[in-house]
Amino acid sequence: MSKPSLSLVEIRKIIKLRETGHTLYEIKTLTNKSNGTIWKYIKGVSILPKYQEIWRVKRGGSKAKSLRNWKEAKDKASKIVTDLNFKEKMLILSCLYWGEGNKAELNIINSDPAMIRVIILCLRDLGIKQEDLKVSIRIFEDIDEKTALNFWCNALGLPKGFINIFNVIPGKKIGKLPYGMCRLRVRKGGQYFKLIMSMIDLIKSGI
Image (tube, rainbow, N blue to C red; front, side, top):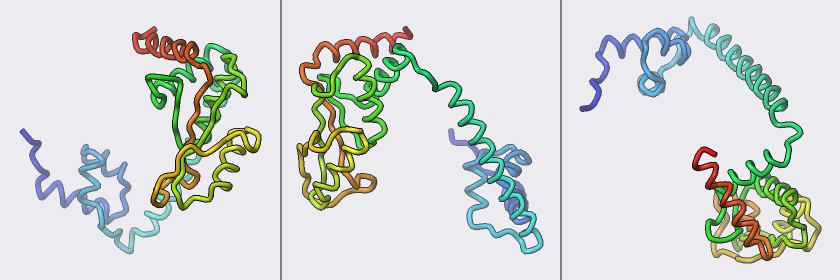
C-alpha cells in the first residue's frame, strides 16, 4: 500500500516556508518530511523579494559550513590514511580488485588513472616488478593515440613506450573517457591472482 499524499495544508505550508526564505534543511525540520518530498513541492518556487537577502545570507553560510566540514573531514582522513603498512595496502588492493577486477585472471580495466596507479603501487609491494606488468589502453577512434598514450604513461608514472593500444573502438568518445580505458595485467600472475582472490574471500566471510 502506497503512502498517502500530503494534504493541501501541508503542501501550502512547505511552499510558504520556501517563499519566506527557509532552506531545505529548515523545512525538513519544521515539517518532518523527507528531502525528496519537500523538493517535489519547492522545486521552482521563488523566494519572495523581502526574504531574498535572508536567503542569500543563508546560502553563503551553508557554503561556508560545507567548506569547514570538508576541511575537517580531510584533516581526519589525513590522520587515518598515513604510513600505510603492508597489510593495509593488501586490503586496499583486494577491495579495489573485488570491485573492479576480472574474476577469472589477474586483469583489471578502468578509466580512473588514480585507481590504476594505486593498484600498481600495491602490486609492487606484493613483489611484482614493473617489467612483469602489461599495461595497454582501449580508445575510441576519434581519440589521438599519442595523446592518450602520453596521458596514461604520465598518470601512472611509467616510461614512454611502456603502454600500447590493445583496442580501438569505432565511434566517438563517451562522457568521461577522453583518454580511453586502461587495462592492467601481470605476466605469469596466476599465483598473485589466487592470493588476491583468497584475501577477497576472507573479507567476504568477515575475516
